[in-house]
Image (cartoon, rainbow, N blue to C red):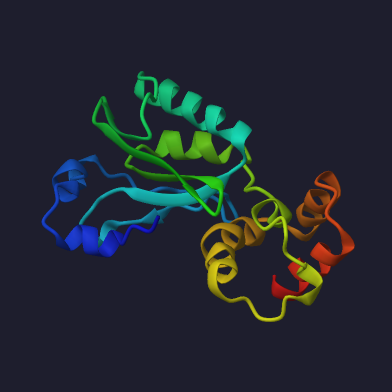
Length: 184
């Protein structure tokens, strides 16, 4: 499922009213954090947005952080929560057979809490279980979209040591390691 956020902003929606400048604080975050949150300030929406693919067990972690920050349990795949001047749009959906979380929020504490969990996307061979990574040349189609939207923000957030630890911890095959090095 694809959502064109920029088209969404042009349709006269209420995000600009929901996320006014008065509730906005510039997010001071260290480089190389994941998930990556993008400021929507340029669209006069004073909030941050992120879309990331998660492992099944991480959904509960994310929803617990939401509940802790907004004092309400997530019960639907699409929710808008308000608490003490902070707002969260939460959308969970499937893409490429995996769970994707899309978030818009002006709650910097929530963002920092989420980033502190060190959530990882599913490994490439989980997303593409029948792919012969050894024979993949240039990235195209779904794999290119997955790489650009979901994998690359995670991969570039890691130091070389963290990448090596990830590869070892997840038992990544030598073929997949070469693929990641070639395209990373």
